[in-house]
Length: 569
Ligand code: SAH
Image (cartoon, rainbow, N blue to C red; front, side, top):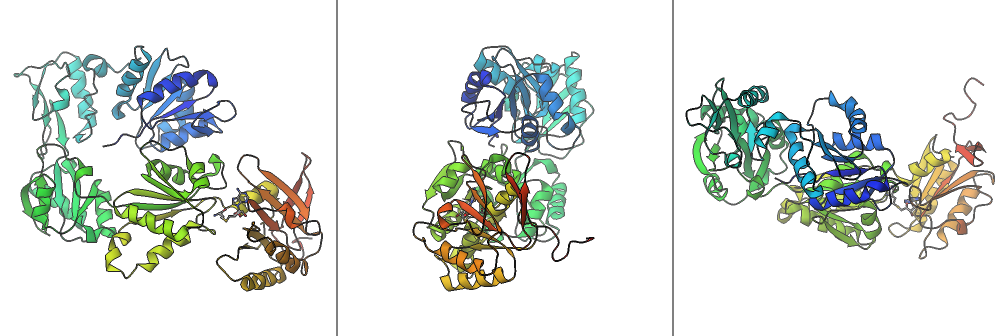
């Protein structure tokens, strides 16, 4: 199982050197630095509190280079919420102290030991069980599940009080642990996949070495699996995964059942269920009703090595550019991606990436090819992200990806593409980001158009401009001009001017949310195509759009929510 690399959070340049030393211990870990104060961080952030809480909610391990008190106060509001508690540590700026704070069951003390070793200091470990045994007995390694945490806590305090213990079953990770072993001990650590009531004086741990091969998927699948396990006297937490035929990859009932059982689904094709067990390295334990076969491995199963997983393709919107304007779901998707595809500028904007993530930069124009390539990668079971700027559904990759899928919807040879889990994650589109900076020019009905005639005839653009102008809609122009399309914007403005007064406010947003951004408000009469380039968003007001001075010298632009007579006037 891969462990998420920790986020290293720094507040000032003074701690950067320590942060870099810690980063070397954890491949893939990124340094998050306060924007404007930390030079050379991998990921700049605007607000410490919001960033820390976001990372915590995403379950990311956190190493904060600041006072322990600051971290505790910042995360305090979240501590009463249910959910996983990732490891959280405070490390002194100069690396002289490593303090594990939260996530005792998620391995925080282990992390503290690793960091402290790298910094050549002693970790400030305060957990008694850890201190005595050098490991958290209540946090068995990946592949094992503790039966009952509360009982486990009592068990560990008994050992700390001087009781001895014997180990029943295979617990290889305990070999190096200095437990008070005694073959006659009353207390035992019992490792087995069999269902049993834990005796008062035993610590029960299940190896996740059980696999269920599924023949038929019904709405009752989860309860059928539970019944089958129970009839075979196998503990439910010992289940590591379900195994199904590849034809079931997109079956929502299967995913529902897996979610209910809290296990992964792996897929195979072209073998009988019994053969599939063999290929998975487990031996047949029993056959249950509903075509379920139970297989048991000698050790916890390495699920990633069994058959293959369902691939995932996410088409994401980065927003205009600034990290704060990227939705959290998109940030999480980028973190889980194996492959990232897109126009080079956007791929760079989406980074930094870890060494294990593969970047596929392509030319901006090869959209259909990029979409097909994305499906090919995802169909191999990989987690693939296609990046767009702004929103992926606005003149961007989402439609191209769907078009590529639509083309093969009846093609049996491309059933694997249809098995891919496809999701489209929205972003803040350039028109919205520009409007927000100007005030509220899109406060009333508006119309969004691309002025590019690369993929549509110019005549339809003219017709739409004519009608939208007549309809007195605010107009948002994407792709307003480019070197290969030099005259189109001028012609578009001619059409608009036939219906709008020269005083109509026009908002020009260039590189909004990116370094060097600029915002300009001009009148329709003043506007010339030279003021606009392909990185500009053009928002042409309607008859009601108005402006007034803002305190800082610029202008507010807004279109009132009402039309005709002002209500109450
Ligand atoms: N999917 C993108 C739009 C792609 S079309 C979105 O939703 O924003 C590309 C056009 O969008 C550019 O020609 C420009 O008109 C506009 N654009 C994209 N990003 C911009 C930004 N940061 N500032 C201003 N305009 C931008």
